[in-house]
Amino acid sequence: MGEHPSPGPAVAACAEAERIEELEPEAEERPPAAPEDYDPGNTGYISTGKFRSLLESHSSKLDPHKREVLLALADSHADGQICYQDFVNLMSNKRSNSFRQAILQGNRRLCSKALLEEKGLNLSQRLIRHVAYETLPREIDRKWYYDSYTCCPPPWFMITVTVLEVAFFLYNGVSLDQFVLQVTHPRYLKNSLVYHPQLRAQAWRYLTYIFMHAGIEHLGLNVVLQLLVGVPLEMVHGATRIGLVYVAGVVAGSLAVSVADMTAPVVGSSGGVYALVSAHLANIVMNWSGMKCQFKLLRMAVALICMSMEFGRAVWLRFHPSAYPPCPHPSFVAHLGGVAVGITLGVVVLRNYEQRLQDQSLWWIFVAMYTVFVLFAVFWNIFAYTLLDLKLPPPP
Image (cartoon, rainbow, N blue to C red; front, side):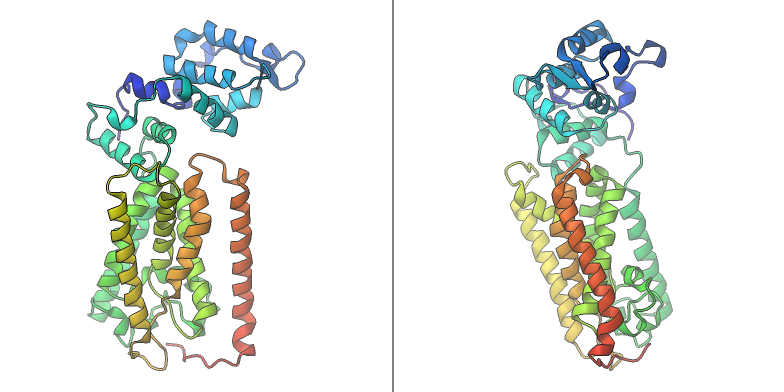
C-alpha cells in the first residue's frame, strides 16, 4: 500500500519502533555499538550511562520518538545496566519482554493520543488503522502495526485458499450439474478429495476435504467468514501463524469426525473457519475493555447467529435421509474440532502479537494437548474400527 507520510507527533511519541532500515544509519555511519567498545569486560551488559552518551552523540540521526523509545529502555533498568542482546533485539525490530516493559514505561511519561484521533489519513492508512482496531486490544500494538505494515507480503494464504475452494466448487457444480445441496448428488462422494471413513488410510483426505462443500449455501458462509475475519487476522499476524491455526483446525475437524462420528464423511472448510472465528471472538471477550472495534457486541451477536445457523444446517443435513445409503451425509463434528483449536492454540496466537510463541508456556501446553489428540486419533483410526467391529458404508 506504499509508505505512509510521517505520522503525527502524537502517534510518533507512542510508536514502539519502526523498521530496522529506518532505525540504523548507513553502514559507514553506524555508531560503534559493538560489545568490545562498550563492554570491555565482555559481560554482555552496557551501562546506562554509556548507553545514554551513545544516544546523545547520535541523536541527530534518530527521530525524536525513536530516541524516546531507546531512553525508555534505559529508564526501565534500575540496576544501571542494559543487556546488550536487548539492545540488539530492539534495533533488529524484535520485541522482547524487556522491550515491551520499556515501551510501557515510555507510554507512561509521554503523550498518549490515540491513533484513532489522527486526522488527514488517506484511504490505505484508514484501512490499516481499521484492521488494527479490529484485531488488536492494546494501543501500543495498534500503533506498532500501523507504523510497520507495508502489505508485503499481502494476505495471500486466506485469499489463495478461498480462490481454490470457489474454483473446486464451480468445477464440481458443472460436472454434477448441481450447485445447491451438491452433497445430495449420488456421485458426490466419488471425488478423491472428500474424507470417507472407508478410505481413511488415504491421508491427504484429512486435509483436502476443505475444497469440497455441501452446496453454495455452505460455501458462501465459509467464504464470507474467511474474507471478513481471516484476511484481517492474516494482515496483522502473518500467513504462518494464521495458516497454522487454520490447518490445525482443519486436521482436528476430520480427526474428530473419525473418532466421534465414525461412519460419516466430511466436507467443507468449517473446521478451519471456526478455528479462526472462535479464536477471534474469544480474544475480543478476553480483552473486552481494550478492543475498540465499533459495535462489537452487535457484531459478535451476528457472528454467533451466523455460526449457529451454519452449525444447525450441518446437524440437519447429517440426519437427513441420505442420497447414497447406507453412507450418511457429511458430519457436523468438524465444526466442534475447529472451535476447540480456536479457543486453545488460536487464542494464544492472537494474544501474542509480535511475541515469540515459543516463549509462552501456554503455547507449549496447548501444542502438547493437540499432539496427544492427533496421536490418539491416529491410533484410534488404526485399531478402533477393527476392535469395535464397526460396519462401515462401502467405498463410493
